[in-house]
Picture 1 (cartoon, rainbow, N blue to C red):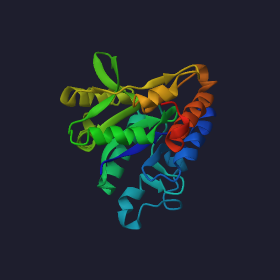
Picture 2 (cartoon, rainbow, N blue to C red; picture 1 turned 120 degrees about the vertical axis):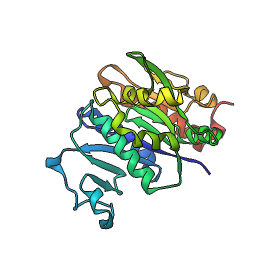
Picture 3 (cartoon, one colour; picture 1 turned 90 degrees about the vertical axis):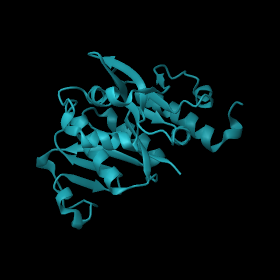
Picture 4 (cartoon, rainbow, N blue to C red; picture 1 turned 45 degrees about the vertical axis):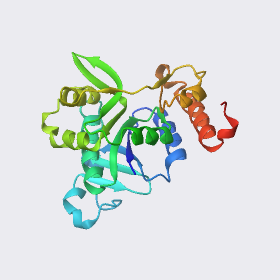
Length: 248
């Protein structure tokens, strides 16, 4: 079997992010493949109070804190757009890939995205024999091609390459562009369809039938983003739990 671990970057610089996280946890709290990734400043470091990393891995506990109950990995460091997101992504990749050999792929995404997990795993099963896989919604910045940070997929060997070459990453760039600058010249990028939900009237059922599994929800200043996320989530739940009620 082939599985993707899902890493969701989290920060709380806007109050609405708490509502977004609540939607993720409502759907995936019991799913061991979904983890939330946060930075935590050194001044707030708990370390040995709420930390499910074994004491035998003492050196890791100095900069990583695992909270299994809340499905969260904390990485010591300040939350920031640059370089915070890149920093916690790389450290999370290293931790989960080094402690669990069952994952064949990694899906890195953000709070305002909604994921059809069944659709993702079906996609992974189709590409399971492909090594060197780097895919997502393709963008371009400063002549760098990259997979959008809202959701990109890495095969395990590519994730390992990213971690092994973290010193070569451009920490002065936004995370997805920096990752693209490292990975695209070596592996290329496979385009993956996504739906950008901006009205709340998108035909989610048809898109699910077309095997779209990533839904990027966004509205002006996030005023309706949570509403859009709930709209998409309800459609996915209906499709996966009550398929006889969806259009054929």
